[in-house]
Image (tube, rainbow, N blue to C red; front, side, top):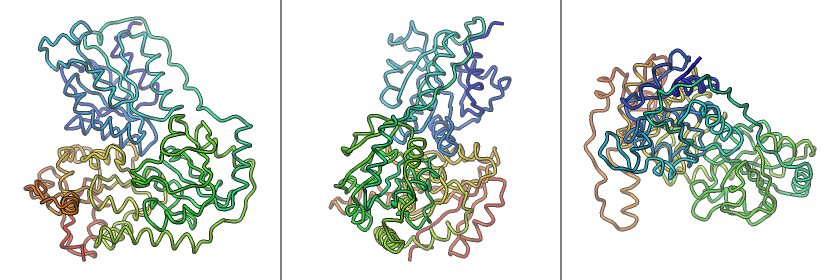
Length: 528
């Protein structure tokens, strides 16, 4: 039986476990949609390719599975470069499949529709790997390379490109897809040395990053057999419950946490590049012995030089170390950790005053399993540190690249894959307008997402920064729509609660809706 390249590609995605794609059809990629229903893959229609990329990102972060989007040549791909860049920065397994011009036309600048001088060159600045299909026989190899990369390396975006004139070529059934190999592991002698290092420490601390997001049980076991406390980056929020008595949560930039870290004699860094976005401009404040564990060999030496480095998958590496250790008493008292955690969170509240009661009310009303996506907005900056999360893959924030417009489409992606799990998002009035059109997707899919819209009618954080730098604030205010009417025009529910009691009542109602709810939060109602 013969298959077109497009059909072989779609079938191959199904065999790799793909069940959803976020896709906008255009004249250059319609062949990808010919057999998508037959393959059993559901296509979700975003309103903009940036939304498609962020939806795939949210899908991947919430599930741990690759998020997939289909893009059209030229502007479709370029519109998605921002989410591809965000996924690269935050190590998200995003697969973008884009068409390109016929090979004979690439770089000729003849004015063809969707022409780009060097489309592959543009993607290489954002993604981890760009590959091109030209024959059906290449499907097994190139999908295998992409999904192997997701499974056994640091999971970053892969872009697959198909010339539009090759989509319909036919060939006999392509070879079967290759099995995905296992992730790398350290050697037994390396594990022994690491266990000895931990055994000799008096005050060890675990620093868990996004690469450890699925290693919660292993990390808790390591805490028990090393006596260590733990601090998590924003990407690892909830991997060990924030409520754990020896967890400092995501408070690494704060003075009390930094002071405690400087008093530790061993830092066990698991799956973190120790970036300034998590630890501040001065980086990790640590001068003791450092053990680093990472699946990315380059990350083993970024931002801090370790005394010992283990190249391997985080969970199985930590499990192997724990097998060589016995439980020991905690190196820290519960009161010591609680004082540091409380002081750190209070410092964060002092920096962004007046929102503490509002965030506590939101946390109190949302079920523990709720997935929360957040944008670059003041309530999310504070929530990164103080909003308690007790489960992994429940707090999705665009940390490294720091783009606006992430929260709403990422929430849609999370809601598509986490069926039955409550989903909420925190977004500012400015960032919401970057991707507000995706509200239509949430309505038509009947997704009960709660959108907490922080509306201070300006770029307040930027305004404060300008004032701090003695710059007269410029271009920090814009005309906003009536967000309640805008939400209603899409068919979403909406409310502007004017008190904590009204906010809690609104959340209760929204959790029972079969559609999204925009909850407008105005500072005059909540900032004391």
